[in-house]
Amino acid sequence: MVYKANIRPAWVVLVLLMLFTLAFTLVKTSDAPTSKAIQTEQEKPPKTDLSRFKNATENENCLKCHGQSKYTYENPESKKTVTKRMYAELVMDRDVFYVSNHREFKCTDCHSEDYSAFPHAGNLRMEAKANCIDCHGGDEKYAKFKFEQIESEFQASVHSEKHSADFTCWMCHNAHTYKINARSNENLSETITYDNLICLNCHGDVKNYQLLTNKVKPNILQKHEWLPNQASHFTNVRCIECHAKNEDTLVVAHHIVAKSQAVRKCESCHSKNSILYASLYKYQVSEKIQKEGVIKGLLMGDATSIGPDKSNTLNIISLVIFGLTILVIITHAVLRIKK
Image 1 (cartoon, helix red, strand yellow):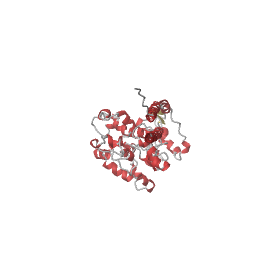
Image 2 (cartoon, helix red, strand yellow; image 1 turned 45 degrees about the vertical axis):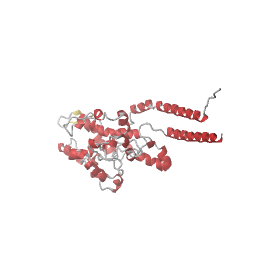
Image 3 (cartoon, helix red, strand yellow; image 1 turned 135 degrees about the vertical axis):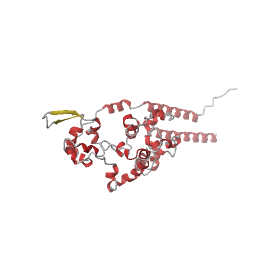
Image 4 (cartoon, helix red, strand yellow; image 1 turned 90 degrees about the vertical axis):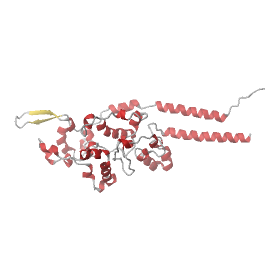
């Protein structure tokens, strides 16, 4: 008796398609733009063209001292020129200031006019710093940013409850350097890094942490030992995703909750109803829908894959392979029925 090999063409095609998908995925994964990223980080930012900013000339009266690590003045008593170091916390980088939110402001818009005189009077150091709500509260121009609601959330946060008036907006948002980049998702990794560094400014720096408490600063890595793929989580989601109560009507959540209330369940993020859709990926999804329509925006958007490995190309290929697989199975079934 002679046995014939029962080779099914449909399954051969299916296996080949699966091998092609696996090979393509490996190629895409290995193609990492590491060298380009390192080169970009090492490049020095261009010197700011001060002529583009209306108050830059007046601000230079302050920055000629506060814009570098040392300053020079003439001692009226000895008639000698004196050079001294500027305290590090009082030095302001021009390039950083002129890309911040307040780049068009004069220094004296927020600081006393008395600073125009040198040497500065000692009591000026006790001058109260303006909070966000002092300037932005009740102003229709900034109503869309909902500063009043942000203030309410902050007052309910663990930061405010534990530290009261000692914890101000300045603790997280230095008015000289702060810039908003969460409203655009053109480069999500930059948004994540920038926002997380705000938290790490205290929680990763012993000196800053001890300005508010005498407790020993907890080791962040040890406290998050339970977290799978810890490094991947730290670089691909913001601290506030797990440590803040998300409010869908705000750009960024400000209600920081106690550590006992932090998100610890994987399905909170890795699911169809991921909390990331209402926070980190919120604007990315809405922008995709506006540009490409509801179906394409949801199916092909980067937010369809929670995590670092998102690729529209792979999404398209996956759909094509799925469609071809269904077609091959149907064709195979029809041929079997005819025989």
